[in-house]
Image (tube, rainbow, N blue to C red; front, side, top):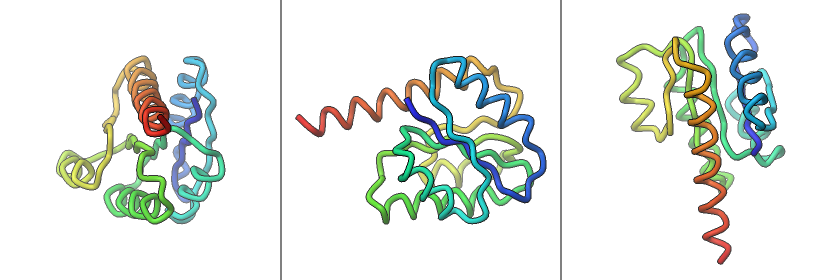
Length: 136
């Protein structure tokens, strides 16, 4: 399974996303880790790398607008089946807007790495199963 993890290039706090990347790698996932300038950077990397799940990390805000833009651009490129996971400093009042935008999972901090890995694994497996079912 291939996972794209990304954070804004202006967000200098990258310890958490690197820790998550290591946990996913240790759970036998291939992880592509990038910094983005615009949501299009995330979508371009996701499409180019043919990822199964996208994880977006936010420490400085902007999660609702950026995530909605990523989802919109994925739809425009026909990649509507790629689930989005959002994590980091997520304010409680942003959760409903993220869910309404179509986010598959939200991790607000303090989550167990094993739970994150299980979530990414399940989302990727469900996507792959759906892709294979569609091909039949």
